[in-house]
Image (cartoon, rainbow, N blue to C red; front, side, top):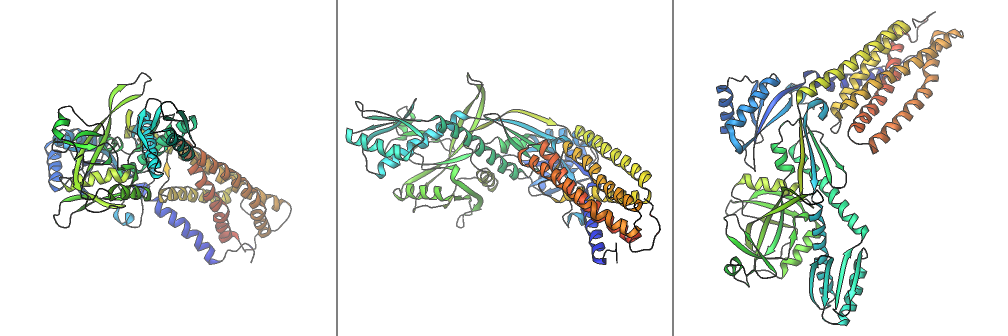
Length: 616
């Protein structure tokens, strides 16, 4: 029968709208202002911390909804932002530097809804508040590391081909190799040029030397790699923080922007993001006396560094393995002594390097050096920050066998310390140190005002469209309004379901735009139905022809807009992506509600009946 949906199709439409409404529901409950207390430098909050937090709040007469311990953190919920701010000050004062007290927003979704995956939409920095960091990459260290890699690579290549040389050293111009005779110079030059096509070589036959420098292309590639690798690692560290939908993007030639929505306190974020923790493995120098080195007679191929107890250790400069090859790190315990340790997994290249480095040193002591780079606050003449490195030997162990891609390091005093070290290593070793040169905190009150204004824009636009449709298209206008409401519900539900979707102010603009686009489809359909009626066709034929004839026009218009939105998402950043996300979702849902949804309602009310006229 004409204009009659089968029952299953009508039920499908109702089911999709119901599911959208269910997962949009958590946004009705909103979020509670909260204070999150976590230990610094690997310390975990426990029940005693929870009791201390409750006592501090009670003594300060600060009302709170609940306080609970979860995954080593204490979370306290409040009814309003005023109590949250007051509690933040009181707890920061009472707990001291051992704990980080951070303002946060926690979903107030009921347990039954959370159990089926119901969560509110993630809000961007402009709506929920949060912290903004501008970080600077130390390019000088990146270039030095690239030069060190050149030096090590030259030695490996020359030894592999058994070409004799006197020394391989770094110089102001690059890496200089001095050979034993002219024959070795010729052979070495040919080998190194063949293996390093992106370097510039200059030989000096009189001095039997070969100097290698980076080409302009190599210099650019090294800088680009340092930025991109640091961005990847910072994203990993942000994921470790558990922040919803952060923004991590490049700005200029040596800066990275990090925005963390919902986080109001910078302490914990700065501890993880700003830390440039990495490991290096060195052999202990047993051929020379540590006392002589302490008195100033440090051998050329060695250096001094203190261990965790402050005792100097004499190590060889040659780096056996760098932390950049670490792909996995997990805290564990020694099965025999139950002492904390960190299990390390290396990538294939790192496993090969470490295997070759340890096979000839079985029975000798090897040191694990923990390195952290920090900005001094001073700047170079070019305006870039000056960094300093803090090195500490965290473990000295005898190599019992040839090591591969899996091994453990010891020396941690507590499980919390090993867990903290594992977190930093698992998140990756930065190619070059970074420093936070600018930080801003966006308060939740500003975000709340933006949310309120954005919602007013959506509701006013929605109300005016509803009024126009009801007046102009009468009962069919009511059907279009039902589809419009369902469209809005579906957008919110899908935004809540997608893990990577974040609502920003531009995203709200995208929703307002899709409201107009959604009703535009029904205007085309309804006008075509009117046109068919004026030509004298029956009611059922007019309804059928109105939907079928308008479909291709609606589809073409929406597809072209969707393509533009996808391009915006692919090439845009930040606010542009937020706009593209809501626009793309809105286009898809509006096509469903305005074509399939309204037709289901129209068919149910007027379809298959003998009618002389339509209320349109």
